[in-house]
Image (cartoon, rainbow, N blue to C red; front, side, top):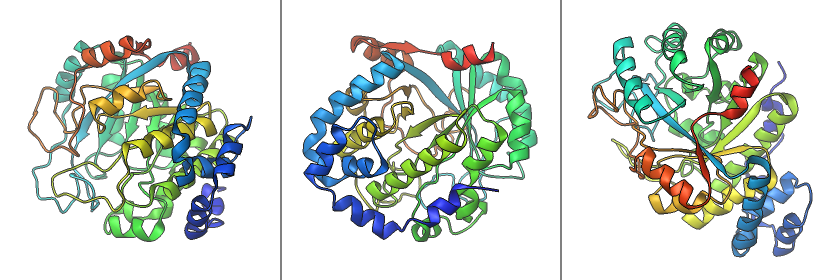
Length: 372
């Protein structure tokens, strides 16, 4: 099948990195004043030369976001179904070599978790598991979707990459969105961080969005784990991937996330530190590059940072998140995938959103309209 792999192989990591760092103030100003920004403009906007243009980038990002999405922020919450995993990943608390007690939620336990989540007001849920084909497989996902579909307007998943046929089985059961992060587009470093398990297959993961597009998914999410590699180059490859997907699977919607490496049980220090100012720069650069992409910010980030970013291009935000199976009701003390930073309740986050002149939205209105 045709896939992003061909385009990816035509780009050298080192050459892309060199090109980004060679961008000048003139390149940044040209990008800011362009009506339709290219990948070269995006390079300029994420380059060190753009650091002093943060204020005009933020103003323009806010304007473009409001024009496309209005003054609304969608709220979602993750439900961790399982911490079982057969992969070794150096940055994840669920890694196979992390000797902890494993847990996969049963149907009665899932219903207990749902009861708490519904009391919080949520209509958009993100189902998350480790990658363990023997326990959290397609048949398990089918049962879960059948169980939870009556309770939520939108169901997203962040699980192991599946085949076109498997995605095709899940979509009619209510699956509307799938998040699949490449983690890093640097192939050599990818191998270092994924030494064992199916996830060690770089190309299979790289081609997952193509399989999702061919299966007809309503929306898919992309991103890298910031801290594994040089963030500017990784972000360029994410933008390259996004551009290809939008052209190829134009009926699908897209979202981006910017997870920064967070502490977890086992610990991995980031190879590259990204400052808050640099993350703001990246968020604004993506908005200037793509006015239609949805941008999500999780509870990995601090209260102060999330408060500040609401007006800069973000369209969805999580609140009250637990990153362990059973974390809301069944087993609050079980192993977390990573430590969250913003521990405020959904009610508190809603008040913050309103205080900035925005409206918190609990449903994906576009999907509701699409389904009628």
